[in-house]
Each structure stands twice: as structure tokens, then as C-alpha cells.
Length: 346
Image 1 (cartoon, rainbow, N blue to C red):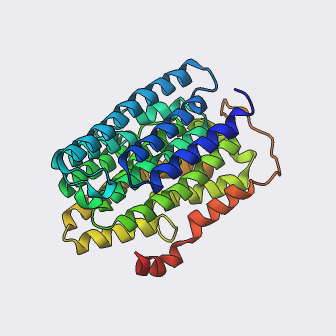
Image 2: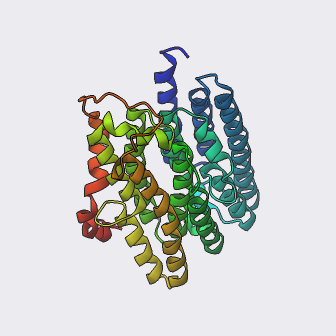
Image 3: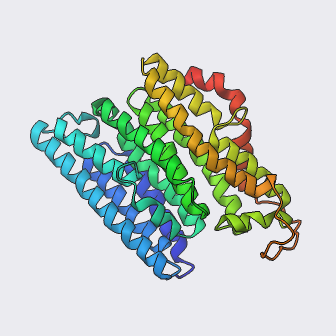
């Protein structure tokens, strides 16, 4: 791919995201989603490996189906109510269609099948964009229409996502697939609170973005595509590996790290809404995710490989992590003391 293509594609992603999150009209929002889809496809398939081309094809087909459903949902609503405004989604069928369309775009259960496969076929930094930036426009559409959505349906999808994201991540050895199932699990936490507190849902997404970005950038630095590569990277970047362990534990939601804040606030809000059983179930399901985060952390720092390992040890390099990685990792670890202020705002 031409070196001039990457900045153009990144600018297109920013343009598509800006159009969608700032629009009030359904057609403009749909246009932004389409610009995003068309900009990310060359970034997925730029290696020209068959796996990358397969991932790009799967991504295009699922996103095209979801975009068609978004358009169909908005047209049905306009036909019934005469409104093209995003916040005026009042027709029950349109609400159901939109929930399905956004669930496909986000990778919520039961529309999650494409997401791990696409991430596995993408380069690490493109996988980072797919896990964070590409989820922001659909999520803003859900936030804008949250008053019209069906709480029971979203709660069921959220619990299923938390369960499946944790369960399917247990036996994975590829880091991108593990992070894909981690993303599905976190989407469950976002979806369950969306109707009751949209601000809290957005806060959870922002913190998830910070933590996941730190993990992806650390993995990209040490070129770790599977667990065995993480296992032997401690000789090359010991400080980065130790930081990666803390960020992974934060992503798991362990106190006193940043990742504990959204889980704590969500459980508190669900209890206030008299949804204690749902809060208890999703808290228990997060233990499944905790297992594979601990597994990743164990491979990165807590254990050293045996001397009989078949993998070649890497040379130690004193080059420090990049500044963005350091900043994101610090934010992923140290933000919990701000919880009272965040709670007051939310």
C-alpha cells in the first residue's frame, strides 16, 4: 500500500466518525458509518495475506448488512412518524431493527461471529482501531436513541455477551482473539447500563478504549501475536512487560486499578434500578474474563519460561516504550482515585 494512503485513510476514519457522532439526521449518520467502513477495509487487507483478505471480506459483508438494516430502520420510522431525527425513534419495529443493526456493527452476542475472525486477520494496530474507534459511532447512535430501546432485550444481549466473551476467551492462544473476546465481554457491561445511564455507558467505553489501546500498543511493541511470544519477550522489554501485566489486571477490573471504576459504578447503578440479579450475574460472569486476563498477565511477567524452552530468547534492548504507550498505561493504572468526582458527574 502506498505510504500516502495511510494518512488519507486515517483522515477518512476521523471524518466518518465526526459526521456520525455530530449528525441529527439518519442519512448523515449512515453516510458517516459507510465512510468508516470503506476507510478501514484497505487497512485490514493491506498485507495481502489470504487471512487478511478473508477478514476484510467478512468485515465488508457484515458491515454492509448492518448499514442496510440501519437505513431500513430509519426509513420505517420515517414512514410511520414522518421524522428523520435520530432522537425521534418511536416506532417499535424500527427500534428492534436498529438494536439488531448496531449489535451487528459492535459485535454483540448473538451477532459476534465476525469479530474474532476479523481481528485475527488484521495487523495489531488495525485491530486496535476495530476494537475502539470503529465502535464509537454505532455506540453514539445507541446512546442518542437509548430512551426508545427495549431494556429487557439489551439486558439479555449484555448478559449473553459477558458470558460468551468470557467463556470463548478461555482456550485461546492468539492475543488478538483473546482481546476480541475481551471486547465482546466489555460490550456486555456497556449494553446492560446503556438504557439506565448513557453517560456511564460512554465513560465505560472511554476507559475501555484507554486500557485496550495500552495493551495493543504494548503487544505491538514486543510483536507478540500469541502467548508463547509473550512468554519469551521478558528478556527484551522487562519494564514494558511489567506494565503490561498491570494494564491487563486493570482491564480485568481488579481494584485498586482504573478498570475497577466502571464495573463498580455499573453494579451500583443496576442495584439502584432494582436489577440486583442482573448485577450479580454479570459480576459473576466477569470472573471468566478474569481467568484469561490472569493467564495473559502470568505469561507476560509472573512466570519465566523454563530453560528447556524451544523458543529463542530475544536480546535485551534498553529502548523505552513510546510516550503514548506510557501515558495510556499510566491512565489505565492510576485513575481509580478520581471515582468520587466521576460519580458526581455521572
